[in-house]
Image 1 (cartoon, rainbow, N blue to C red):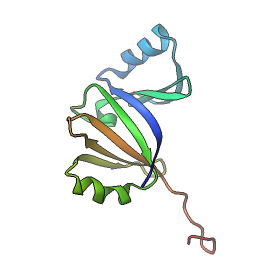
Image 2 (image 1 turned 90 degrees about the horizontal axis):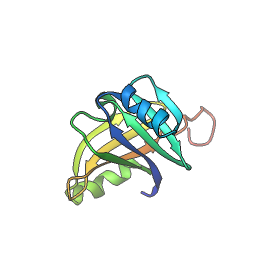
Image 3 (image 1 turned 180 degrees about the vertical axis):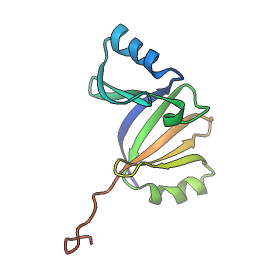
Image 4 (image 1 turned 180 degrees about the horizontal axis):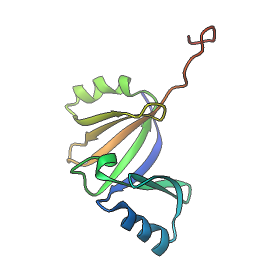
Length: 127
């Protein structure tokens, strides 16, 4: 298991539209991707910063959430469990990938994200 990069950092916002207006209009950030009022992702100097609704980011979360991209969540799980890491939730996002929300020893929330693996085609390598 390897952490490949910091994929994102986001804030959970009760009113995503209002928060989006602040970051987009007031601060001048450029929207990279938006999923209605659930998720708005900005590009900031090659890094990603986003706003998430409570339904998208996680109910009860506050403050910033760091998202680290990993190459294999399943391989990481035994190490997390052996270390006593608190697993707060998991989410399968289909063709986008999957996340695991955890707490570090100080109680800070972070998410581990694994991109979806390409589907294999019958007769092709890996099928």
